[in-house]
Each structure stands twice: as C-alpha cells, then as structure tokens.
Length: 295
Image (cartoon, rainbow, N blue to C red; front, side, top):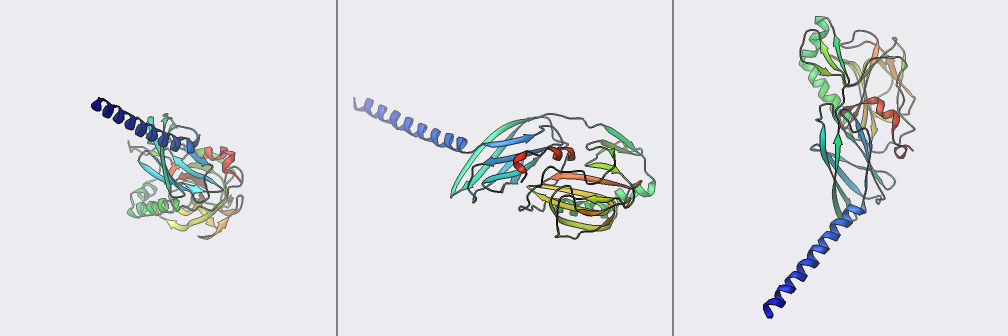
C-alpha cells in the first residue's frame, strides 16, 4: 500500500511539473507574435516585426545561421531579414529571442523559401576595364562598402514608400547571372543599372544618413552609401559627383549627387543596389513596404 501511494505521489508531482513547464512554454509562444511580410524567394527582403512590447524590450532574430538585432520603435520591434541570392530553396527555421523587464522569451517559426530565376546576361568589356576587377584594391573597397552597409542606424523614420533615385531606363536588372567576356563563371548582378545622361540629378529614395561618400574607387568610381535604418541600406556606384557628406541626414527626394560613368563603367548610368544587413536584396520590393513600417 505504501509503495502504491509513493507511486501515485510521483505520478502527481510529474504531472504538475510537466503541466507547469508546458504552460510556461505556451505563454512564451502566445505572448509575442512574429509578423513576417515579403516575398519568400531567393534575393528577397522580409519585413519582420513584433508588436505590443515595452519601450525597453530588445531582441534578435536568427535566420540561416545569421543573427539580426531588432530596433524598438514605439513599442514595436522591427528588423529586416535578407534572403540571399544564393540561399537554397527549402524550409528554414527562424529563431526569435526577446528580453523584456528582466525576462527572456524564445520561440521559433518555420518558413519555406522558393527558388527564383532572374535571368542571365553576357557583358563584353575592354581588357583595361576588366583588369580593374582583378585589382586587389577593388576587394578592399568592396569590404569597406559592405561594412558601411552594416552601419546599423536605428533612429530614422520612413516617409512613405521608397522611390526611384533617378529617372531613366533600367538597362540591367537585379539578380542576373552576368558573364564577363569569355569567363565561364558568372557573377550575380547585385543591383539595377539605370541608364541616364551625365549630370542628371540623383535623389535619396528614402530618409537616410550618409555613411560613405568616396571618389576614385578602382572599380566603382564615385560611390555613396545611405543607411535607412532597420537594417536597410542603399548603394550608388559610378556617380559623376556627390553633393552630400558622411554623417549628414538626408530626406527622401533630396538631391545627393549626379549621374556619371566613373570606375569600370561602359557609359553614363547609376548602379543602384539595396541591402538588408549587408546582403543585396531586390530593390523593387522596397516599393511595397508594409504600411506599419511607414510613419
């Protein structure tokens, strides 16, 4: 009889323990809800937000082994999540960690990334222009640009949707597998090329802070990098001139420079690229930002 009572007691304690743990875990899951918007395809940007947090709440989101910090704005956590062009199609787990009022909460969500083809392009360049791609300084310049694109400004409000930075024809699209001369190995085209004329004004497509303004880079010529906050940055290559300075705040529609053909360029145009946490994403998707991300 005593042995039976001990057995029942152990079962009861186990039930209470398991039930309690289950409730704690369930409360963590139900306390927050991760909202993801965007196109779940290669080369895309996902807009992530968690509503109803305190102003002191912080957090991170991890996707494809990369961790990104949330920005807290008016009791909502925001960040962008890049899906790189080389990301394999399939299921991926997203891990969320939040710290609020001394408590830590964690939960996961699974999403499915689909493949997407952006086409191919054959480009012929002179040997002098092609040699610029093999210059060691070009690699150092690229590293500096990526670091600038990861600057992480967190106090910028967006003013409506992004707009096109310059008027003109899109001569080369985003994501193309580009072949140079007889090289059998292609490179992804990380932005869009907009053909225009020398001296045409380039404007900021969204409110931002200038985090890089350089001239005479070996490959990219005159270069500008803007940080728009929430992990989003934009890059401008082959410019003719720059009329803003590093550290300067610029407003959407403000003139930031002019069209040119500097660096390894075959004619006057703007290479405009957009990034999420230093990863190139499809610029056209920023023309359809969720309304909750806009002031």
